[in-house]
Image (cartoon, rainbow, N blue to C red; front, side, top):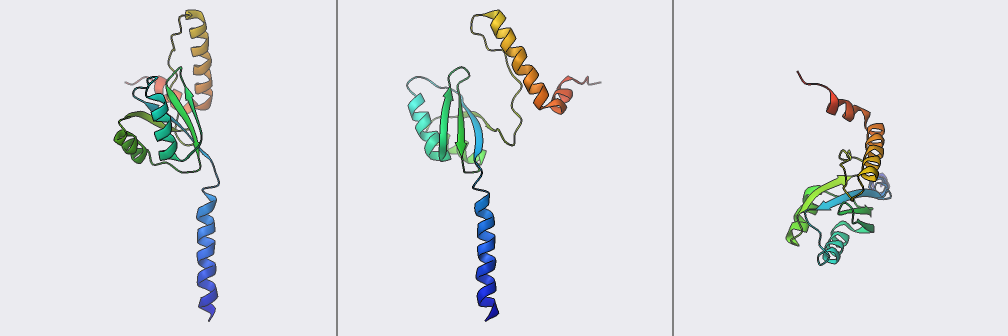
Length: 141
């Protein structure tokens, strides 16, 4: 008789614990190998359905998509499903868990502004990831 109440209660506790992890929104940066004007809408549609995105924005400067979703994405699964749609992915970064790549210079035609922007992004990256910067700059013997 007691087990009639304990087992369902235990099951309910376990299920409620697993649902809490879905309450947190996850953020990803996804970079396809190639984005053209013709493929942009198709890539957005595929990413939205595959990731269950609650928000999806496209950054034309560096050809990346920023995705918010309540799902915890498996990078290999997402990459495989996108490849089935003929959209190979260059990278998937979990903003909450992964380290962002070191900034690169973006050439817009204005060398001074490009340099200022690069230095700003580089300082921000170093402030966020001091240990990684130390690893990048330490001399190897």
